[in-house]
Image (tube, rainbow, N blue to C red):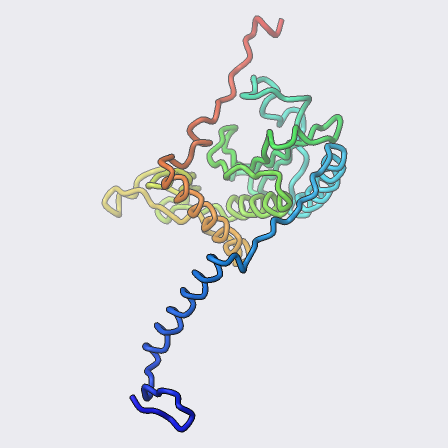
Length: 270
């Protein structure tokens, strides 16, 4: 240490590592001092509450926008004979018939279908009650659901999230892989630690590969733009699952608590 002409004490040259720790120490000290003296006061932003009439008007416009986006992808409105609940009892009370869309690939051998459920009443064109229902995206095979995407909340990004999920499901069934030993279409299976994890698996075992099932990633055939969006959503889901585990809760409650559709009693129909 030595004194300069100005009377300041110099400690000589400082390494980058020492300078970094000194900067961090000053930052912590400043933060503590500011908290003690209330220098930084966080002002809560006032959010304008949306009335029920404003909410219905906004959702009607959003449903119109979603209708155009889905039809550009090739989705069509579901006909009464394609409606899943026409001969079934739904797991929740429905007001009228909710508007749905269906996509079928051009290859007739590929019997998978992509379904979009918008929670919009067909007759009144109004949405379901606010914060009481969510949009659904699923892949169906021979009338049975093989994949349910995570439900979509009616947030400001509702239409965009529904669109990207519908687009991903369309690309998945359009590019449905076939096994390498028989050329048969693969099926969607679930497994692993993550309850939402899905992958493509061959129907039969490959006897030329030790009798194992052939597996392909569920992202097979997705475009780069779709994969980018899918990965963003997965990061959000993983972060949310970590928060649930930190609270002692197990992720995937929606999948485990999903109520099945029950067949109508023939006596009640007569």
